[in-house]
Image 1 (cartoon, rainbow, N blue to C red):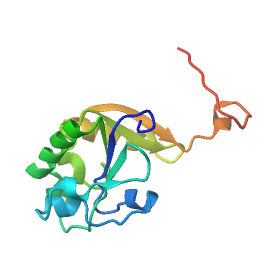
Image 2 (image 1 turned 45 degrees about the vertical axis):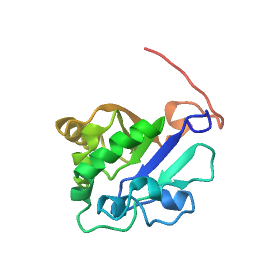
Image 3 (image 1 turned 60 degrees about the vertical axis):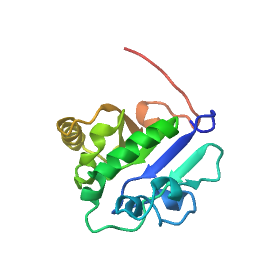
Image 4 (image 1 turned 90 degrees about the vertical axis):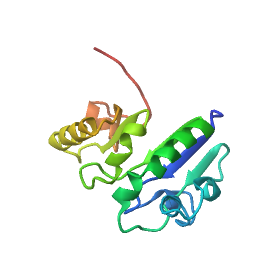
Amino acid sequence: IAQAGSKVLVVDADIRRPVVHKYFGQQQSPGLSETLEGGSDWREVVRESGEPNLYLLTSGKTAERPGELLASRDMGDLVRDARDEYDFVLFDVPPVLAVADATGFLPELDAIFMLCRADAVPGAVIESATHRLQLGGGNLFGAILNGVKPTRFGGNYSGYGYGYGY
């Protein structure tokens, strides 16, 4: 999205097990948790990613009560303000069935995509996560399936492809 020219902010809202800072070779702190604890304005800790139009708000230090921080009024304000300042704001949130940390602000988001690893997440788990998101008022827009092996769908090829059907 950033490569297409849109201004994008990636927010690591998984305060318990953050990873976004590692992918971009950034420091974890200061970040989201410090801003929500009242230490600074979130805009002051946004970092450039090294890619044009792509900005990062890392998780910050591990907090004692991440669920309370993410459900705070300050988090709702951050979501609304970031939406006004960026074309797209992407939140990496903790697994919805493992912890309830993100449920407090999920209704503030325009769309939620559930990320699932192929052949690793049972259908019942996906159904439970979907139900929890819907009960929490989240707008589940779709799913992203990763780790798909092309041969699983009957093809024996090593390139990319696509298809459609009914």
